[in-house]
Length: 285
Image 1 (cartoon, helix red, strand yellow):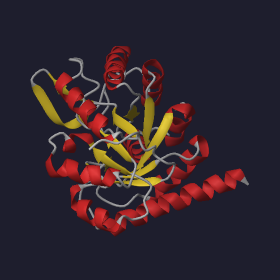
Image 2: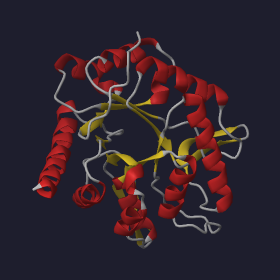
Image 3: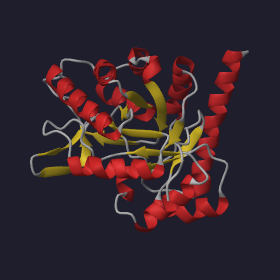
Image 4: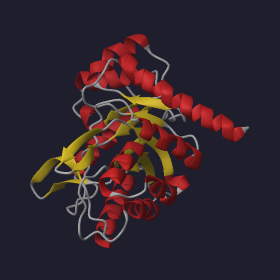
């Protein structure tokens, strides 16, 4: 099955569509703006791809990758990139995104999104990899800011400046994860609003919202980006500030662990839509 053109992602709220809700969503077709899926889950074809094609008949789709390892000094995995292009050609997604991270080096692949040192050398590496990816895919991609728990002594560039430079040098878009900003701001002691103000407004094409968990580590509090619970009130407040700064953007509710009933995700999405519409209307008045 192929589709004639990408269905553009509206400036509304979508949900991360996981296997637990494949049948429920297709049977009920709730009033949701769009769906985002992890690209790699559909590389193998079969029933997952069948469900995705059925969903694509009713909703715009965003493909969100977790395995391209754009920060790898070894360059891009050509097989992985070819699989992604094949899926894009088949689904015609409205947006395609990846992460400001790396997960592969030599013969080792880590099951996580590992942080980069924010240096000029790392900036050159990831910029070159994004450019190559966009050339092969024939389209712009979005890069998501990470959540992090440690920093490199070698880092010489603040994360927000690094992300802005990546976007400008590679001509990619930005997926601004507000939960990640909030988590990292707490863990490293920077100001979340400073982060927002440093990001080029025209580059932001999508936002993510999710839940986090607080852990105690010796005498300090560490926030962990678990995607396992509802959006925190402070992240909702940061979302309101982001809308005021960047305008209305497609917004995603991410919930990847301890996944609740579909109705719970839809309630979170409706809350985000309410905030977005309320602020947008207030600015228009």
